[in-house]
Length: 145
Image (cartoon, rainbow, N blue to C red):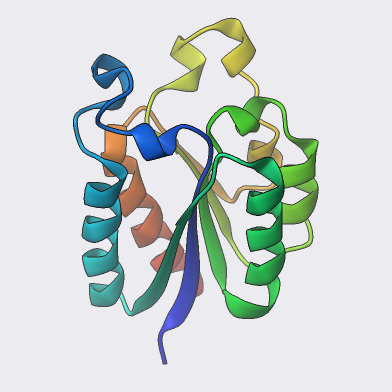
């Protein structure tokens, strides 16, 4: 039986490949999701890819994951630095959480150096570009056994 994993992407990640390619690269979110779906299948994971620019929608998906998923991989985007609501939702989820950032948030503006999500995550992958997503899936597969 495959294990369900939610891959959640927050605000502006729908613009991957278009927004600041010098920071975020040229691959689109569709490219990332397609590659992750293939890898997930190979790892025995059932991946559900979701993206929203709205904090409440991300919270709702995390609540949904409580009954539907064994793990969450999340790139909360700018909500990393502002959303106690997303942290609180993740704290209600029992499975592993891996946080992903395409850029190295610690090498950017000071306001990006703190992530609320990190307090809940079993692992944080940052600064690896979109390669961080498959790294996160591999880690989830290991954690789920």
